[in-house]
Length: 133
Image (cartoon, rainbow, N blue to C red; front, side, top):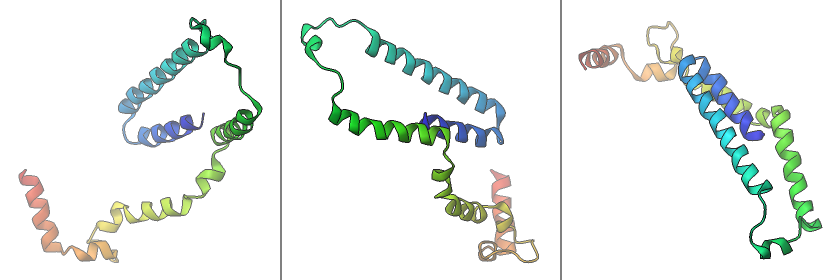
């Protein structure tokens, strides 16, 4: 469930760039979910053929104490991811401001330090090289 949140956020962000590729990627996510459900059905609901496996007991108390907090976390992250997302909000905001295309335009009256590193002549030379390719 918490993996779905990550996939959904990636697809939601990429949908703003290209909707067709996002639709193709979404079909991949749907196929993966179908495969996981098919695998779960075969593992959990198929009859036991090995007689030694029939002697195995189900989950014991120690295993239950270990698994229950993980299950709670999985559902918590899946249903309400905001507290976890908030922890890296500041770093993502900082990254977005650093890679904003407006920071790299030397024609701006007050351009950033990144644009100051590339002079107008060098920028024109780079643009000519890119157009020549």
